[in-house]
Length: 553
Image 1: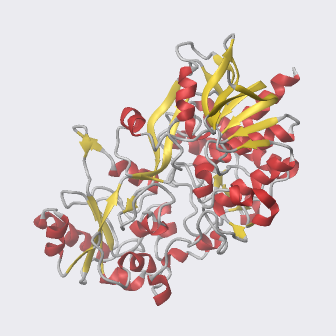
Image 2: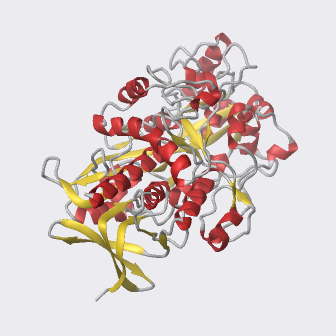
């Protein structure tokens, strides 16, 4: 028989990313007894490896950057952005996220969050839609001093060490910084898990502060404890059976279980079954293999919105394996810079290269006859780009030319090196150069939208996103399909209750879900910076509140 552990909890949370910790903090603040069950030996999940921003329309800090917001405009934007999402889920995000921000700061004791600035690449991701905002809607955690966690400090997954205010990067448009000897060798932080660091930033700071509050409020955090199956009695979820050190433990709770176990990016079988697109790299932690999805399904849960991911393409610069990705490999700013273009395997452009990473990634992985239509794709740039932008200089470096970087004296030679049709590539580059000189992309409108302009180089005219590719040497780096994480999973209602399969609108008593193991995220869209964390925290909060209400009845 399994060993009995923690049988008197009110709520058990499976997973210690932002989705789970937001639920745990909420429940503990409302006076509930809480246990967090975490599969790995570290707290933080994929959130700890993230940028740490969380999308929170209508939040009370927006006025600090000169913006106003309304429920009506936020909903108008979300509904246009993600029309296939259940309306009640969008309502829940808009109605609850700003209340969550207030709750965390005013009642729970989480550090004051900072609104994103209104300059630089801080737009909602589809700013051409009505109701969008440039900045303000996303919140960002402040610097976190690791000494505040005491003995728990080395148990936090180390993603971002504090090197400066990330919001300054956007406000000062530092992606446009000019090359220098220092930027030529810039790369990821040298800090490794286990190193003693003074302060952390981004997603690491977010989970560290949430953990601080959890510990202060008496939440029990069980590391290296993998959930195996949900405990169900008379149709109600009453706990979870977990494994630790080769033995089984039985965690039970009066209010139920919040499943916040993340996505399934490291489960090849589920990727093949549900995603059906190549996922060569991900920011998800290696422990994310769909445990929560499978436990919920085994307990009779419905699933929804599978087949999507939080797409984030990357350039192949010799880095392999799962996250954390080398920051220089993530493909966002590089695609917006003048003197760059992207072609597919046929040597032709297929999209506005400057699109937000979700929409670009979705197009990149478009299929035809069950195969990727555009792969392999190539980011092409020239000497002009390398001499003007450190972002491109970092890809070239200063040492011997690596195997993954194709360098040629002509466009024709570059075509042969990349395996694309030389005639097609020459014609594409020639046409692109004409657009750059005229300042108008007649095929895809690059540089015209608010998103493109917010990232563009204001000193480069006539179009800050277009520049000729004509001065040798010419360079090519392969662009590959990747994602920050998968999305979709256990189908939830607007209180984060998991719905039963095959029975219309019947919730499974005692089972909740939030984050990337649930259907709570917007479908077919990435509405704005921090959308994955924002919706995850919102539904974790809703779950905890529902548990508290039901236990009080």
